Length: 473
Image (cartoon, rainbow, N blue to C red; front, top):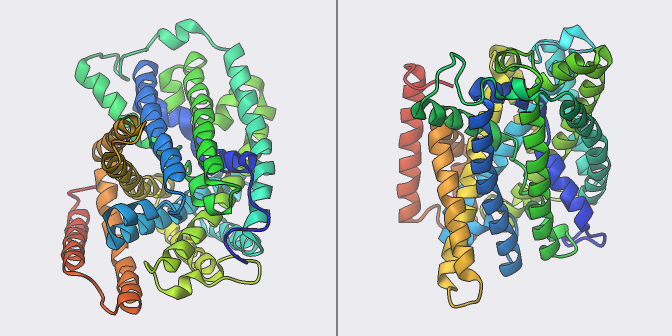
C-alpha cells in the first residue's frame, strides 16, 4: 500500500493524535514533579516560557508543512536545510526519543497496576517486566496490522482518557483555596525568596514541562497519510493550545488544595493520590483507570511514530532499505519489530535501576530536542532565503524564538542527558554509513567523517565522566 492511503486521516484524528501522543504518563505526575521544582509563582512563569517556546515550535511545523509539503517526516527539515548527515542525526534522535518514551510509559503503567495488584507496585520487578513486554508486543502486532486503523482507535482512546483529567480539574477548581495557593507563592521549600532562587526554580521546571509536550509533532510525522498537509499543520497548533490549557490547570490548581510540601512528598503518580484525598478512595481507582487508558493511548501512538520515522529514513537513503520493508497492510514490519526489540532490551535493564522513569523521560526529552532544534533552524534558513515573500519576516522571528528556546532549555535543564544521547548515536551512524555506501558508493564525506569523530570523542568523554561520577543521571 502506498504511503498516501486510500483512507486518509482527517483533522479530528490528527488533533487527537497530537493530544494523546503528548498526554501519557507525565500529566498524572505533574503536580508532585512541579512542587518538587518550584512554588506556584515560579511554576506559572515557567509555564509561560515553555508554552511560548512550544507554541513557536508548533507554528514552525505549521509553516513548513504548508510551505514545503514535499518534505516527508520531521527529520526531513534537517536534511533539506543542512544535508543528509544532519537529516540522519535528526531522524535517529526522533526514533530514539520514541522508544525511550515507551520505556517510560511501561514503567508508570506497571506501577499504576500496582495500585490494584501490589506485586507490580515497583514497576521494574520481574512480574512488571513480563507484563510490560506482553503489552509492547501486543501494540506492535496491532500497528503491524495497519497504521490507519490504529490511528482511528487512538481517537477513541483520547476521548476516554480525557474524561478523568477534566473531572479532576473541575473538582480541583471547586476545592481551590486562595490562602493555600498564595501562602508560598514565590518562596522555596525553606521559605526563602531571592532572584537567584526564583530563576533556579524556573530552571528546575523546564525538563518536567518539556517532557509532557513530547509528541506534539505526531501530526507532522503522519502528515503523508493526512487529507492534506495544511490540515496536519492546523491540527498541531490546535493540539498544542489544548494541551497548554489542560497542563496548566492540572498542575497549578493542586497548589490551591494542598501545601507545596504535601504535593512534593505525594506518592507517584500524584494525581491518583491527590484525587483520592479530595473525594475518597473511589477517586484513586477512577484516576488510576484513566491513567492506564492514557498510557495505552500514548504507547499506541509512540509505537506508530518511530516505525514511520525509520521507514521514511530508509526511503530517503538515510538508513538501509530493509528498515523500510512493508507488509501487505502497508505497515513497516521491520522497523516495528526492531523498535520492539530495543524496547524489550531496555525493559530488562530496568531490573537494575531505581530511577527508571526519570532517566527514560529525561533522555527521551533530550533526544527529541535535537530534532526540534533542526526544525527551528530550517524555519530560520527557509524564511531568510525567502524574505521577500509576504509573511516570511514574521516566520523568521518565529523560527528564531523557537531555536533560542530549544537550545537554551536543553542547556539549562538537561545537558548531561544530551551527552548520553551521543553514545546511542554511534550504532546509528554505522547504519547510516552502509546506507550511503549503497546510495552514493561512499561511506561518508570529509565533513561527515569530521562530525562522526567529534560525536565519538564526545561519547567516549561522556562515558568517562559518568564512570567517574563527574556527571550524574
